[in-house]
Length: 235
Image 1 (cartoon, rainbow, N blue to C red):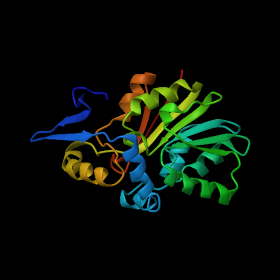
Image 2 (cartoon, rainbow, N blue to C red):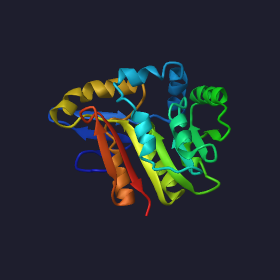
Image 3 (tube, rainbow, N blue to C red):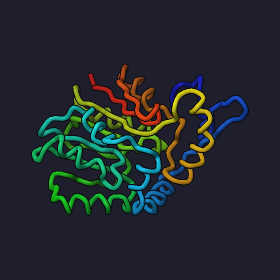
């Protein structure tokens, strides 16, 4: 985790000081996450609406990768495949898209999507992203609404970055707490909602993790700071 002045990790628990109380987030293990997402696979499209996802958010995130025809791109946490079409459009039929996810339930939906669209250049892999090894350097990596749900996200980030070619782009798209008083007011509800649905950690700050790794990163916020896309280019 980053920004020790705001939060710190002690014995696996993330502490976030607040004026009147301390909020805690306990990371769940891989099996618990897999089971939760297997159960959510049939209703996952509803969450875009439930969390007020901005229009064309997924397409904008894919565009931030600055991919070209023939490129090779990896999506970490591809889920039911809702970003795969945007990534495939960016690399064309001669490029390659790889989607990695822990949940077989989510991947079954993604496989069905690929079959319906006859996407022969999309490969889906069921595994922990920290264990995925690309056979060739990647031109782009996207965390598709997944970074905040990964307990060992820093390990996954470093693994992905190491497999990215120089000049390649890494992009993280997700939701976050809005800034200022509004964010503090919705924090208790946000923690409750995430723990009971997507298991995301609203206290993680991926843009800071990426900035420490890459030296700098670009970031764009949407919906009054509740959603963001951040990215960096590998030197």
